[in-house]
Image (tube, rainbow, N blue to C red; front, side, top):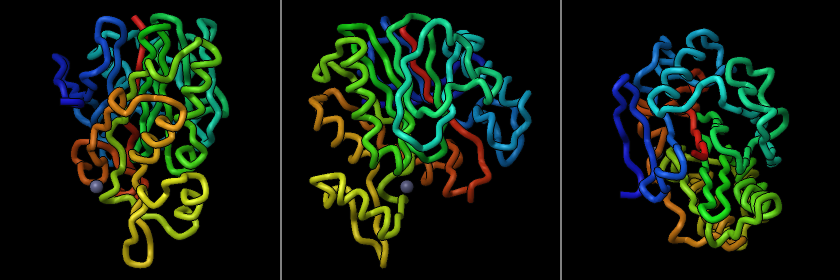
Length: 270
Ligand SMILES: [Zn+2]
């Protein structure tokens, strides 16, 4: 099994990948189960910018961190603007955005670090969470890839940033592509489809004609761009779980018409 759900003692259900070394890193993707938020954010909403009660979201983040043995006050988050910029995170940024969205790292959608006990956490409702681990140089990354980030190849840029900053060899990188909207549900228009045809040599493999529109496979597009820079296919695991098909378990922006919470993807070096 590449990806499975686990149950923590405090009632939280979360997902993790079997190919990440649990002795070197902590990582997880939250579900919507185990929190305190009310509808439409029920229950484990981790997004501060959703219109939900801030105190409830902070409590949910605390509950999620507790389930994983991560220090809530230390988590570092990003503004997430559907761009493709990557930030290297340092100890001076410990706790940035943990409780206050205005303190999240500005203008970036991906975070990388090689510092231990500096948990990196991003938030999602259909967009693709990509978790990265370089076990040789002990470096990690987390990426928020919606269609704009994916077409701008943010996952690829994040690996290249890890190479530049930490000496990461892409061939050593372990990657997890977590639950997000799948090719079963993600319909896009001609404009979006064309962006992908322009940016991807094998664009026809990620687009399927559907009525007068297209179904887009964001998972394959992220896998493809990682392979382009030398990440090995056998080191990339795709959960294959669609958030829109499973909105009882995950938050889905599309399936819930934009009124919903956010799940978190977190990774931390031990
Ligand atoms: Zn689906």
